[in-house]
Length: 186
Image (cartoon, rainbow, N blue to C red; front, top):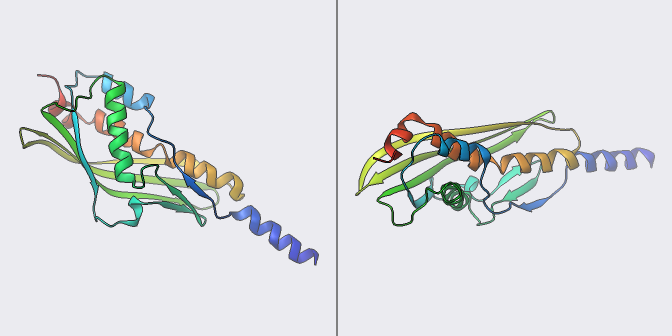
């Protein structure tokens, strides 16, 4: 009887089925600093899609049997919202601007091994002016976090940290020298 209770208690500590929806897009300090470091022209935000189009990573990430979903139902839509939020919060968003920023989300993953967690998000960003591509590049963001054997600690830490990946991805875009050259106010 005691052995069975210990087994149940141990399994409860490893994790549990948590279903969590991320909060809406918020601006980040890193993206704000990157956006303010050069004279960025106003940008419109075009479509943000996923390749492949039906990728499971666009709908959710899993850690220890628990699922995190974006507030908009798709991580590509969430990245779209983050782009608008980051541009708007820094005075660079104009839905009628001739420069249009779009993206294709190609990777979104989270892993952890009871000690450390790792998240990655990759997208190919494209900036067009009058229908002509002036910038196109794959940008990568990675985050790491300390994890725990105890699922009640590890799972929320994983979700909280992974939720910041889209902001980190946008900050990495804004510091790209090629992006800065293409998006600079002329």
